[in-house]
Image (cartoon, rainbow, N blue to C red; front, top):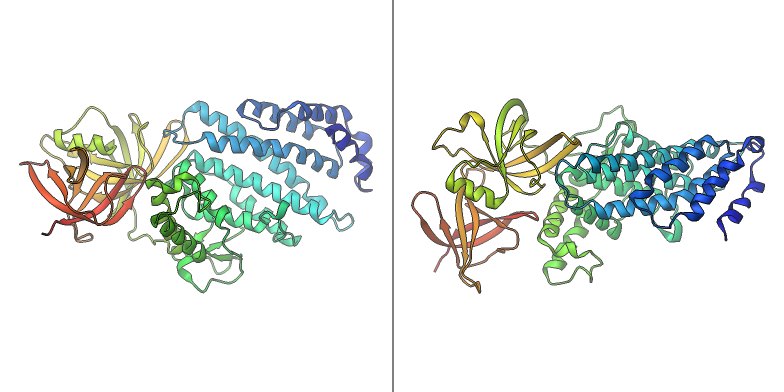
Length: 514
């Protein structure tokens, strides 16, 4: 049906309560919006954000009965949906912090989503009017789309490593509560799609893994996993029997879900709970299937699942959803400057030849025995990525002949403006040594830079940091050249894989036995 004919059919269906607005409705405003929709392509990109913003502004300025306004919003919604899909595809492998131009582009899109979500939420008064009850499908569609618009805002913030705006999570909780009050939260979506509660739970699951510790590509993979697996989760008013995988939400607070092992809810709060142990089990089964030789296509997964980065994400998700780790040590506030170098090859050269002119300057804001939080001061951060290896050293310790480099892995990154970035580091070793790996059975006699980490009381085995994909578990006859002081050559075998990201892997190693 032509879009003008479709909309003309809406006018006779106005409710008695809203019909008084008909005489004040500005038909020219409606016609302008319909003409734009008729001429706009089905799939939109960044060039259409300003035009969409203008149509929503015009719609706000046009007095309309609520059902008619909702129908217009429903015509605009698919265009926004296509725009979000385009953005998720384009936001991959971004440098940190992201550029001012890109941030302004995302900010304009976030404003657009916020306006459309608020316009949907402004129609909720009609949904709760006992004298003028709308059809159930209208209530479900309105709330479903409002929740999606709020979740897309959260996801865009996550993709650019930024903190969601104040009040966004509380607004999402409140919208879900509205769906519960209208008893539409568990009704299937269009074409038997996910319910409102399922969509809401998916957003909570994604937030529970600390999105700032994943790249944009990894977050897209996790989002696909959650929607693909669709574990049988439900929100309950009582705590889970399995505390290890239990999360809780206080709908009155502007925060996502919190692991019960990390913090308990206030006794006075009205709390909801969900258990993610079944999802962790499904993730484990997927990882084992891939390890046994099944392809991502056979498991209905993107190709990323078979990469080292994808394998590392699956390992982390098993822990994040199956048994979240409680913080071991309290953090202490600090203020001192450090020099930071990033990347395995850069660190290998640094430890062999000493200080280089590259690197960046950071301020330590807090620390604990197992890591640091840093704030960027100066220098380039274009090569810095979550999951990469870095080395830091206090500036006051930078005296000739000293190494004192602490090897760390970047666990999370946050950037709320183009001039500011914060990162969290997990400490791996205080005394890394440069080394080279030679595969005895490799076709070519190549030497790959690596870092040897000495044994510690916490980790009694030596470990080896190598580029992702170079080695695997239980690999024998690996030649290791240690390049600190006198050159020494050892034959080793790999043990367990301790860490795995898209950039590096860390294996325990042992002397090769005859």
